[in-house]
Length: 126
Image (cartoon, rainbow, N blue to C red; front, side, top):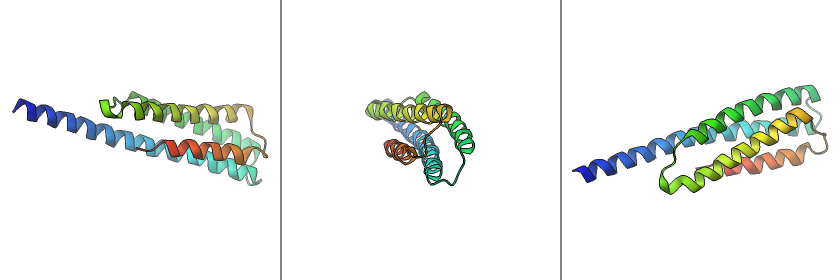
């Protein structure tokens, strides 16, 4: 009976982790892809430099919050390595977006930076 209860608690814990991680990773992916989309529009001349910088600064703040939420989760033993990889990826995206928001972006490099963000977004999956 104790064994069944222990196994049930472990499974419930994994399910809770998977549910929360999935929610936060989806949110993070959406935020990162939103930044990529804005960069692409900037590269096409559809948005201004001030708009891009303000947008990227807001995105960086949102991504940081999501990254903190993801990193606060306690991954079960079988998911720890993947969890660490995802945490590293979202923090990498956050630093990239924050840096672009602070330093600015050349319209010619915007598509390349957007593609880099899209690559990071692919890493944010369960």
